[in-house]
Image (cartoon, rainbow, N blue to C red; front, top):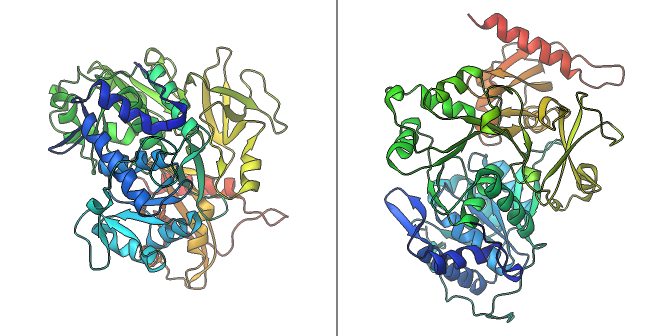
Length: 519
């Protein structure tokens, strides 16, 4: 069952609908804590009132820096009710990266927890307004203080619920930047609604479904292609803070989980747990992989358990979920990412944006309600990425005569580590600031656990520079998944006559280095 909701209310009408329709059905499960739809709607209404009382109005940005918790959805939906914009912080980012995002988004208020004091302190030195989910230090507020009286109906400037259109921004989702700094995809209520309806239709989601959310909710794949569709459909979510393979299996076997959407490495970890062969996975009706290709052996392992792993593809600028391979095709089409979701269109084009023939390589482009409104305060980057309504993904693809798509390479220099985008330029910007680094280039190499890993080539005056020394100085500036896992020192980087680094040559060298070092 789908419910589009009233246009003038945006996504915040969804919990209000389910609170009336199935008030006692679980909406969010967090450990022993269970929030019904009635309780979730009550929290959303009160947080919206509290944000209004704190001075938050349409278009203001509200930051959220905390581990996965039900309050994430309270704040997101409350922002949606006000026409405000939520800025979720990737909790794996360093203090420097988080500070850059807070300043770029110009947030007016922060919801956080004491676990992140080492990172939030930099923000609060400028902002000064924070609400803690746990016991706050002196001078800061508790999250419960953010619960105010619900907004009245009607577009009243002081008390009423403002009209919210599908064009209103809802989220700023930051993604690694090709130029060295993260930039934010502006996601609207229409983006969230259109993507949710597409996912609900493609995956057949209904109110009796339950999905587990183990990855950070700040990721587009977690909040937009997983959380929002479940909320739109009135289904329930089990929110987890850690990825525990054995616990995930328990949730499927005993916790009523009917759907999984995780990266292949987690499926591998689950399959490697003791007793996997005797686990009952019959309640799992849908299992989707994203972030990296799925190996035949992993497909066969789950097929033996009656579970068909389905490949998927998505990117932040497209709300995290754009292509999916039907379960019946998973074995015959290994390496393919499938067909566009409902209401989305895909084309493979040449450098002049002309569609190429079936079987020819070109850039994958996507159109539909999933395409972001643009990059936050970056009109030039927006214009180069979204042209005539088509999102240029930077991925090279092939489409066959039936419209199935396969990703063959990246037009951009991005690598994907554990399902998370990593841009070499961003890593290089930090590495080159190290006092012992003269020049640097970062490429991605295959990694058996994470899909890809950063490999750094460094020119240095210090011949004794080691990977450990290099990484030790980066912990406050670079997230762990972006830190190089391999280091080779060169006298100089290979460049073409125009001075451009020959990355393909470095990738080939790096892969040869990995092969030679592997027993």
